[in-house]
Every structure is written in structure tokens, then in C-alpha cells.
Amino acid sequence: FISKTYNVNFISMATRIMLGLPQRPVVIQPIDMECVASKVSVFSFSRLKNSDPRLGVEMQSTGEVACFGQNQYEAYLKAMISAGFKLPTKNILVSIGPNAQKSEFVQYAKMLVDMGFQLYATKGTHECLKNVGGLDSVIAVHKPSAGREPNALTMLRTSKLDLIINVPDAMDSQGKSDGFALRRAAVDGSVPLLVDIKTAVLVVMSLHRKWSRERLGKDFFSYKSWQEYVDPRDLPMERDATHSAQA
Image (tube, one colour):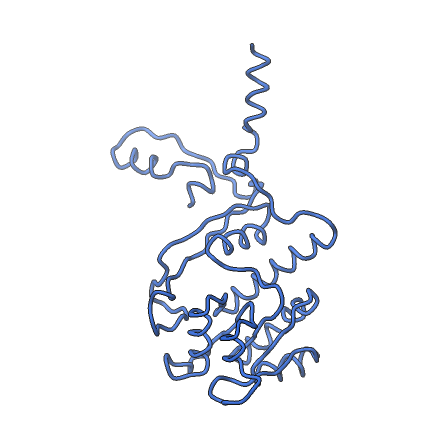
């Protein structure tokens, strides 16, 4: 990934150095790069029955996707989509455990509302978004164990939600919580799931940047080859023009 990003074959360089062969130093200037590269992990929780799709210190990814873009938002959203993430179109459920992260997400919930998404939230998150953020449009839903409607689990199973943002807290133990039931149902129902607050924040920011540009009639995604991103000075058209001039 680093070799692709900087267009430098570090494997070849390392091999030559280990063999004692001469190797010229390579100067890398990240600040001069005209693109951003983002790598996103791919998980296979759908194949692991009853496993809790939450992240920890153990390595759980089964692959990675790397994409390039003009900025971090484009590169990240491209990588997420390439890893199987489906962009939400209407309804989003927010259920965040830690109070500090509830408050942190308020400003990003406002972004989602501005983009026209209908937000649903479980009790604690709903109270925070309403009382702290003044988001009266957020609809409260019951947790799975409540057994009452509207219920988050029922909405998930009836395909009424496009995205689940469920950030568990330390007490959210595997197989014993409402959070586990939501996360597992999201995976089993192929509904996009975000379980990390920083990931959720970056996804919202990327969606908002995309929405802002498209609202002005501008393109958000750029489609170029790897060579065009990492070495725009050596484009095929320029080479062809040079060859023609020489001929």
C-alpha cells in the first residue's frame, strides 16, 4: 500500500539493501502529493454465526481495500464502497453507549439531518440528540429487549433502516446486550454497520462533502488510473504527444 501510494518499490529497495547491493536514496515528499490514499479493512462477520461484530485489539479483518482520491473524504468513501459499504439513502439508526461519544456525535447528527436523513435513536442517544443538539426530528425507538414498538430490531428485520451506527460501551458484553442484538441483526440483514465513533464521524463528514458538492452541481468522485493519481506528470496523452513530436 505504501509502495503504491508513493510510487516507490520499497520491496525491491529492501531486497537490494539486504543483499548488500548499491541502492540510491529515494526522496519522498508527502506534502507535495496531489492525491490522498485510504485503506479500509474488510470483515467477514457474516460468515461467523453469532459472532459479535465489534472491534477489539485482535486482528479480525480478512482483507483490505485501498483507493485514491483528491482528498481524504473522496478516498475514504471510495474505499468504504469498495469494501461493500452501501451509502444510506433515507433512514439511519443511532445508538451510542458512552456519554462522551454521544455528545461528540451531536454535530455530525446535525449534518445527517441537514442532508435529509431521518434519524432514529434509542432512548439515551435520543435524549442527548434532542436536549443537547436540539434535534426534535429524531424519532425514539425501543431497544430489542423492551418488547415494544417502534422497536429498533423490528425496523432492522423489515428493511426500514439503511445504516446502523452502534458504538458499544465497555459493559456491552457479547451475546448479552441489546447492542449485540442490533449489531448481529445488521450483519445478518446485510445492513451497513459502524461500531467506532471515529469511523462514524469520518463517514458522515465524507457523505456531507459529497452532498455539498453535488448540490452545487459539482462532481464528488474522480475516476482515474493509479498512474494518473501518483504521477500526473507522466500521463499517456503527454507521452503520445512527445512521441509524435519526436517523429
